[in-house]
Length: 381
Image (cartoon, rainbow, N blue to C red):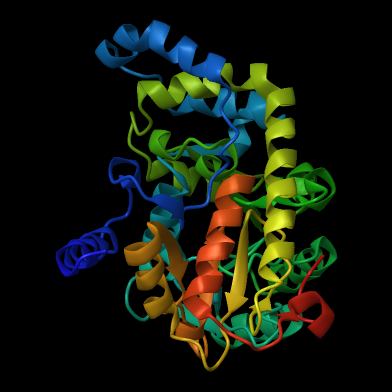
């Protein structure tokens, strides 16, 4: 690579790192964003293409029908559902306008804290190196700060670690005594080994202080369509969130996906199984990199700590892009100790994952021995 080519790549990296999407236009391999590469099936795009004129020219349906369509997908009554323009819209409503005091474990998905007004969010630090949530300490902190909304992302982002269902149920009981709603973000739950057993969705009616958020973009591979939903049996809370939604908040293309999604239940389950298999192979490959601490993942991405002697996460990310045309997510912007030592790596296809591991090996060029997180007692199965 010439100096000019390298300079051009550096310039492109600076531009890409300030964007939040549109990566497909730039021709690099995206190991940063987290979505299902094996869904939707090709016949959905055929259906969409055949309806494109009507979908573009006509108004989409409003909230009532959208809730019915999501309810058909998840087998829940529509009165418990609010459909958002991505989960981000719902997060903005709850964090920005409903919660008087919100508590969230960190590191986690930054948007819950970012959407809250200044002074209205408390960040509960997860202890390294395990990054596991102690629900008893979390509930105690929620009581001290008089939080009326608590958030738990499971599997967590960026750690890819699941919070056990029994712990969440115990947390719900503790928070109920404090008149505190618990938002459980299950956006990555479909990539766990037994999502039907782990999800709280089937138990929603038992917990009036529970709301489940889900970004359908992640599991269903439809990031550009922007669909998310909230599920809660708390009628008063659901109404408050629904009041913050505009009448046509989801467009016709997203409506078409929701209308057809029930036809693809089997394909969806198969696609999630493929994602899990690819992720597990990537985890094993990453564990061969000397000096890396690799956390055993529950979602479709893997959390790693770089060796102390290696370059920082931002430096590794830049080098991977400039020299190998691969983009990943470093954790330097997360609230955590030594944040610049951590990476979050999205799993892609087997060939792409293999090429990524080779590129990361080349960047690190380390002789240190690997420390698999499961063996060190850090990971979740």
